[in-house]
Each structure stands twice: as structure tokens, then as C-alpha cells.
Image 1: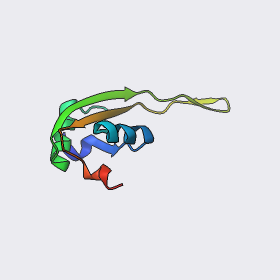
Image 2: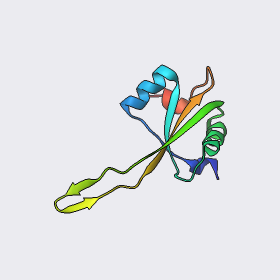
Image 3: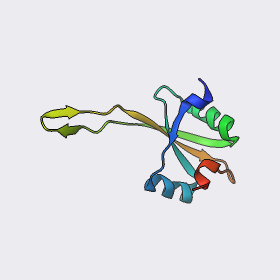
Image 4: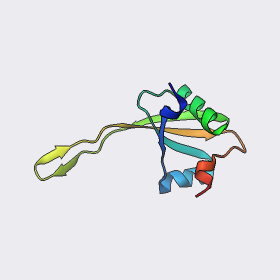
Length: 95
């Protein structure tokens, strides 16, 4: 799998920013078929950062109602990446 196609986007929310500042863990939305090893290789290739661990989770789509119609968004997969001591990603630090 191509490194640039594994990571869809960084997840920038209040909760993910608090976790990043406290523990140095970065959160990304990734492809559903990406593995932990794919994410590790992609971050190493794109930002030249040493990755300690990767945790992945699949979030379910929240059912929404509009009138009598129901819709359910697709499931998404997230990766929480822990970098080695002293490593940072410039994508998050510039904000």
C-alpha cells in the first residue's frame, strides 16, 4: 500500500489536541484496509519520525433521522500513533 494513500487526514479536535499535548500521541483517520504496520511505515516515510506504537479503532456511523427517513454514515477507522521520545510531527506543531 502506498504511504500517501494510507493516511486520509489528521484528526484535529479538542480531545485529540489534549492527548497530543499530554502524552505525545497523534490521531489520524486512515483507510479501512490499512494495518498498523502500514500506518507505521507511512508516518516514517512522510515525516521521518520513529514510531513506538500504533493503536487502531473503528468507529461506527451514528444513525441520523430527518423526518421519517433514517441514514447511517459509513464506519471510519482511526489510528492513535505514539512517537519515540523527542519526536514531533510538524503538521500538528505549527498550529
